[in-house]
Length: 354
Image (cartoon, rainbow, N blue to C red):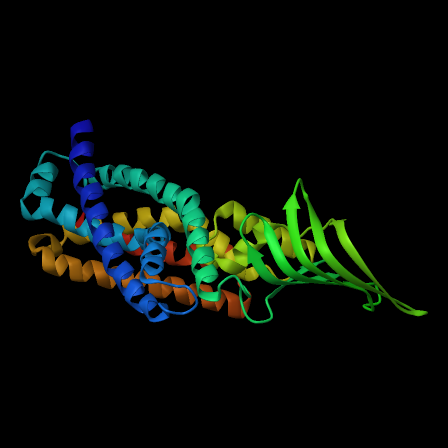
């Protein structure tokens, strides 16, 4: 049986990886051509656009894994079926579920690869890609908009105008409110550096607001303690889908500490956790399709069916997420629903092929 596992696994893994490479090439080229329109803004060059495409590739690959899994599995298993190998295997007494087990062992290898790419490599390269692109386009002026972006830390609201390399921030406005929501301290800092768990502010202009009036002072340098950490900038500079699981968990914890809504990020977290399971379901889905009449067709129809199945899965995933956010459904339900629905469909198809 180890020979059977290796034979089926080789075809599944090979064709899934080849499909992933093809999809990655197509989608990377599309994004590159779209990004070329920004060449010339700031100091953004064609080389920067090419670098952004390459650094974004791991994140794009992680997203495309389930799609590549179903198309690649249909091609790989379909080639075995078209050469009558699956018929011979079944004629020796091997059940369809045993063949599925061999395919799922291959899926386990692909799931490990998907986790490594999606959780270790992609978050780092995507953040680096976005930071370099933003720096080149804006020439290190405002990060997000002309007014920067906002972070809340309890009763303190922080506006960051610039993000610089090496845990450095520029043009910080810090507004501290009391329990009655009255502004008490307004601080501006030209520069902030983070080291050893706390910030050092430089070029400070501060105003204390009290019943007796406003007291202003200038300070060259001062320490500042805040729950705001450079890691939170990752949420602003990188898409939610590109964040790692630990990064999402840290940000959810931060939002809960400040009594802010976490639903969107919890859904992203559970989608991340379910992602390997979705890859396995897509491979499992391919087997009953191949064991049925589809196994007698050429590679073209199998690719078409694979694309249709993948698009249906992505559409259901998007719908489940949007409905979950709109109607306040549990993020676990919203994330699991598409994979469970396709798993049930695959099991029903298995009953038909025997």
